[in-house]
Amino acid sequence: MGNTGTEVNVGASTGSGGAGGQFGEGPRGGGSESADVADPVEPDCVVELRRCDIDYQVEAPPEVTIEDLASFRPAVPLLGGEPSGFGVVGMPTNVYASASAQEIPGEILGWDVVVRFEPAAYVFSYGDGTTVRSSSGGSSWSALGQPQFTPTATSHVYAERGVYPVAVTVEYTAAVTFGSTWRPVPGVVTSSAGGYEVDVREVRTALVDRTCREDPAGPGC
Image (cartoon, rainbow, N blue to C red; front, side, top):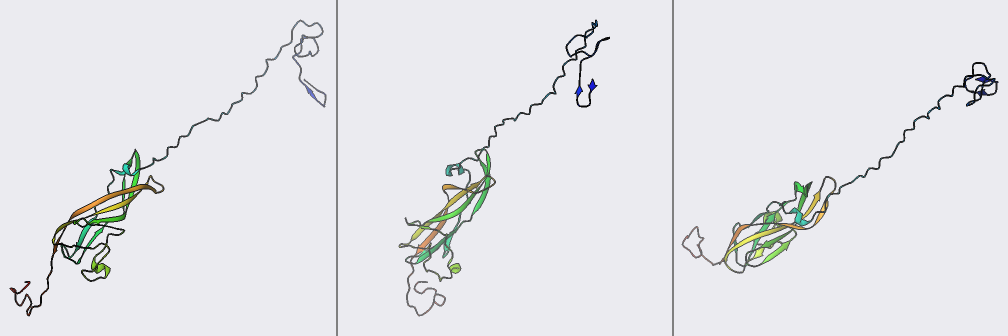
């Protein structure tokens, strides 16, 4: 290797008696030994970084229909009326029901879910073939600030004496959540209550000179 001051030259190995030979050539000056040829240097190994093409499959929650909620049942509404258990022909008998919003956890199509039911309508059946649909379940006369035997949104006037089975069906709207937002489900789920009978009687008035307490055997006593 020689250094002229301006460049550095790297030559081949020299022979035993000759001047520096060129790389790949024999020794100059008749020398008998051949020049050592250095093994080529392997280039640095380059590690190729490859981007792994990975398919990400995101599974979305299923679309829920009202039929999918068959195993989710809202609570049975409460049903009552006044005067309790009886009514008067030709006068309003007040009937009312109560229901509330409910959230029920469970599973749909392998997914954990919460189902929310909210009462949307009340359908009263008064036992005489008459039905009334109301957006509310009604209330008692005292809660409404009304006197007895006055009409309410859910009261009914019976035309004849008899015992009438009263029932109510509550229509619930439904929504589901799989852990983030609420999704409405088209349609309604119903829950019914019955077993409330109204004994409707006739009331007659008469002018008497003494009350039933004073004369238990008197007219109408």
